[in-house]
Length: 338
Length: 145
Image (cartoon, rainbow over all chains, first blue to last red; front, top):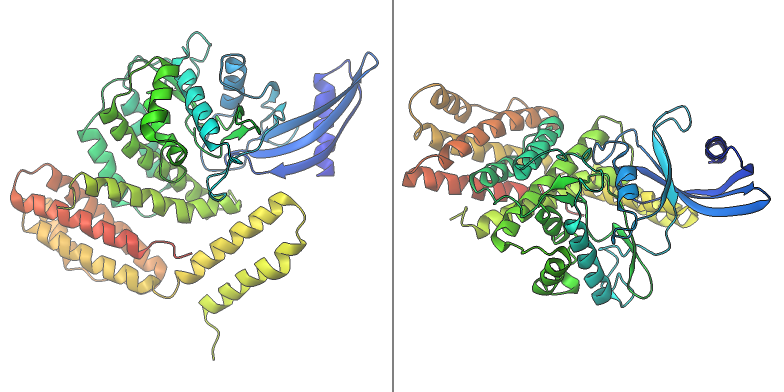
């Protein structure tokens, strides 16, 4: 860690040529998105006689992880969404040259707040679950209302497309399954075929889709406000219902904190869109397939040795079963089993 | 008494929790150790019946493929289905059984897709039987920790 602190200090000094006495300490690895290595640290420097003392986050590309993300997606989205009504950390620097820290990385502010994780008991939000829940859905609605082209986000996946979002995303995750599956999963393949046979309507508008909008990927404050929405590695342009369906996935659902009808009304009010419940059902099945794609990528990266993160192996074993079980439950509800 | 893989791994998991974890100060490392303990438990509890689960699964897939062979038009697919329905597991190691799983499951996916394109009660019944079998396979293989 001391060597890494020194290398980070060298990088900051290079980016702040007017700064002197640049020092980095208190570096600690934290869990924060399983697709990138996350560290918190303190950085100090002096410019024109003024001392700066910052608490910062380093997000470094892993050798392998849950998803294969474009390395600059998260940084680009954070920068574009600043001041747009969706709370995100302020970003400072991105570096794709591996000479500094071996792999691409970026540095952003450490935002106050704590993650209310879905497996932290019955009260993950310190008694503020209803307030947090309303803010969670309001922010997602605000995100859906953004125009990605106006924010310069055409570089996101599907950013230049004029439609066909569900086909594109389905093909994206089918390719991940094809690449990662060691033993083919007929359950997931059956769900893929069902999704193609029962297509959803085109979205009312293309939206910025967070891609992993769920409990565990935001920070909240004691008053129930959300200080930051995090982990945008899978951000792309698509149907805003993709995020809605993902957020109510049974594995991490926010649904248990507020009735579904209430949260969907909050989302509609904030987005200005009318939510199609039948289309939402399609996206819920899609969410289970997408989850299987993610877990398959995780499983493959642990199996081939490119990842040695315990959470990667655990999701490969445990979460993949939960997602296939969800597909089975949905297919049973559709009458597939007689 | 003879130590089994399950009891050894269970003991290692317990030691990780009781002997090592209390001495890990770093939050990230402690969290990783807890997850390692869960992984050990899942693997330990999945060892004893791993072969039996695969052998039973293969037998049921072969039965479904045999049913399918009687429904599809005579031709290349029917021949492949018949051949697979009559096949046997090549060995009892997990690696050999998983290779056979890959082969049989790929054919099951092909047959399943075929049933979905048909408009006959027999194909519909087979489609539903495949989904029920897939549910049973998944529950048999569920992580037990």
